[in-house]
Length: 101
Image (cartoon, rainbow, N blue to C red; front, side, top):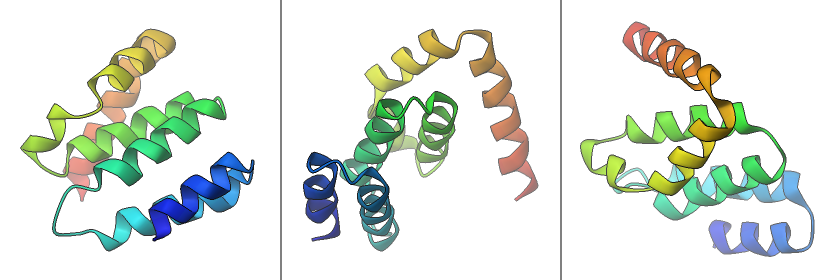
């Protein structure tokens, strides 16, 4: 329900509330990859022009499991093309952050 409500909120232009619903949906589904909600979050971040946040969120998603790398490849390519060299820096920073945790 949280994911669907988030989609409804996004359609009505309530992006902040939609983001909260997508985050809720992603956090509730711990047994499986939260593909739908993560996709919605990344698309909303891109729509808002928050490319660095979207890229970091995508990298975090890929860390959830090896099978996660089979999803969101088009978004990964688009974000890396948009961010250019900054993508490499964000990837390294994300790897360091994950190594510390």
